Length: 145
Image (cartoon, rainbow, N blue to C red):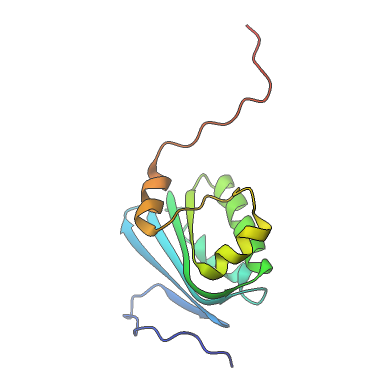
């Protein structure tokens, strides 16, 4: 069985899940603001489980920070999971930001060269980014008077 990185023991009321080669946990720095972190490996074996985990409190989450800086491996299936998360966050009106780590950045350079995903450099910046006013949409067709 692959090794999940050593983590301190979670308290009984913790919000942690071990799934295959990854550990997912959630903290709530403010009401309606979740930080979902992944540790270990995110791939085809647990990508959809990660999306489900990240959105399991979507009814009470308004702002979401996904911290993947603790991943040691991130596959293209992980990127697909992030794309799915992005689509679902838009549909649920959840503002979200991604804090990638080295493993995630390597895949994003190939799969997301135009930076379509909402990327932040660290958790404090991500928390600020998600709570800012939403970006204005581009107007592709000029309005007539």
